[in-house]
Amino acid sequence: MRSAVLVAVMALVTMLLRFLPFFVFRKNVPPYIRYLGDVLPAAIIGMLVVYCLKDITPAVSPFGLPELAAAACTVGVHVWKRNSLLSILSGTAVYMLLIQLVF
Amino acid sequence: MNKTVVRQAFIKSVPVMAGYIVLGIGFGILLRGAGYGVGWAFAMGAFIYAGSMQFVGVGLLTGGASVLTTIFTTIMVNARHLFYSISMIGRYRDAGRYKPYMIFALTDETYSLLCDGSAPTEGDPHLYRFLVSLFNHCYWVTGCVLGSLLGAVIPFSTAGIEFSMTALFITSFAEQWLKTRDRLPALTGLLGTLLCLLLFGPERFLIPAMLLITLILTLVRRREENA
Image (cartoon, rainbow over all chains, first blue to last red):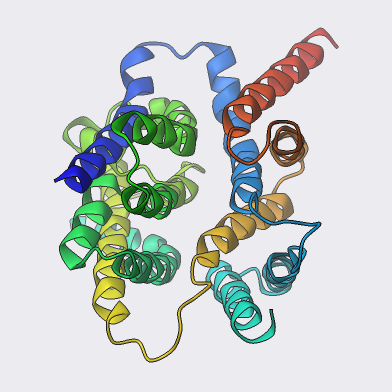
């Protein structure tokens, strides 16, 4: 029951965030908001990368090495092949192998 | 004519298909590991329909989070959707009956497919965007359900599967970096957040980071206008 409430809350808040701008800026979008709409998506992706890596501990073993190696692999494969799925799969596979077999 | 639109929408959605099914499977496996079965995987995939929020949501469910914490976490993780919606206001304006669903289904990936504004020259562009959104939604729910079902029978350890979400964002970041000239927004997001992480710690850096990013990008705009 409690879990169902939480899932409903997540669904409703997400929906609200997606619909809100369409209600608020029904007629005209102010230039400043349009500018934010242009530049923020790129910045937010950068923020999410850091968010995903927030729990690594550079000073304590394994020093974030599995994450860094897997991230480097993801970037490397992406620059090489420009195929998003391949980059995600190889990065994830490297991470799983590292934490299960090495660290 | 509609047939052409359906086909072109499908072709457009193919790159997301594989990604969504794989990521959805990752989510389904994680959710099953946390003790929530296939019905939950379906409901979360169909109704929340936001990949990173669903991964974070597994932690909220198992951690016994309060409703208030859930509200704030959802706002923080999904605030970027405000900006996706803002940049689609013009494009979705005349979408009519398709519009509510298209807004509901505006995920990172759907946004990345539709934000360049491309649409087939023939046929209804709104039907086309509606179908791209719908196809992506179907892939995602399929992945979530598959992962939940597979999670019970998969013969190897899935520890570390959660890195698929990190890899997704790293890939989006890299793709963006390679595609555009103006790297300032991406750098602001990355470095501004890193700074806030160091200053405020891993528990409460997200809101300061969002404020700092918005502030820096606002100042940059002022400077460019005055220049």
